[in-house]
Length: 473
Image (cartoon, rainbow, N blue to C red; front, top):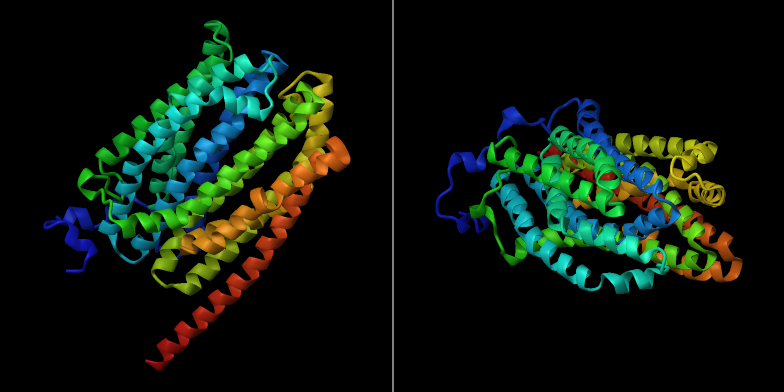
């Protein structure tokens, strides 16, 4: 008996064999159809998640510029919180898909169970730490006295549901990694409908203001976690979540952490980048902060479907890599890349062309609208390259290549953006602030393009070597 399987003296067949009746076959020979069946529900799910933020912003926007600025200032904190979930989830998804590809179903279940077990104490610790330092964080972000009360109300209420949010994120990655992106989609849709229905009730009918928007989000998170609990209790997936499968072995946790850490660091740097963005905008007034908040939200709306397509497709790449089927991996990679580039280019063109009507959905202030339109256009000039960057990051995570994944991921929000947002506004004022995002997008896209050329060349060499070995034998 090998060492990993020696942890438990007895394992039943139900612990090891996959529930093939309940999931999409990741070895399906119709590769394009398989990718679309996995990716489209993931795109819909994450798009719904983005739409949930839009609905919140629209209702909050009716409360005035200070309210939407307060919610926008909370966005870096939310990104920071989501970063932890994404790190755990990405590490778990890569671990699960590679082990499923190798036929190691029990090990995949252990990775999933361990990831969820780690999420709970991390969520509780993060909640307490942020609540104790919330006012200081908003001061650092540049919150004005008029924005501070609403920002504290919204963020403090939202933080009470963070552990549930964290578990929902990790659960979503787990079920997508085993090929059940459709269930993840319906869970997100259910949460969105509930949030959208409760927003006007809590914000206006009960007169809770921005706190009402946070409460609506909290209730939707409770609904989401309830659905995931039912999913795993009814054994509807391939991966089995059980207390007996939780493992704190250093080598298994290290496998989860090495892939997840770059994803977390990327999101953390993204949060820091947005903090710096708002901090640099603060001297230009509340209207500038509100306008940048709108532009960032519109940018996020476009990024999430592309990210969703990559996340949904990740199971195919990881499964093929685990099975050492390089021809399948190469074919899948080319198709996924073409789709993400098409999506990012189309969205970029749409936003540049329709910036004003899009911005008008979020604000009726003429000054905020004018600033936000300019910001949206500049922010999306090179957004067409985001599809390449997103795909390369996902592919490297699927292969378990932590260091290279970290380099590509950190380039966009850390290596390039932070120096730009600190330097350019000092030289060119508000226009320099806007240019920092566009130049970062261009530079990160070029780095990703360089990496993908080399990765495809390496895959082709591995494929030729495998074919040569088969001919030899």
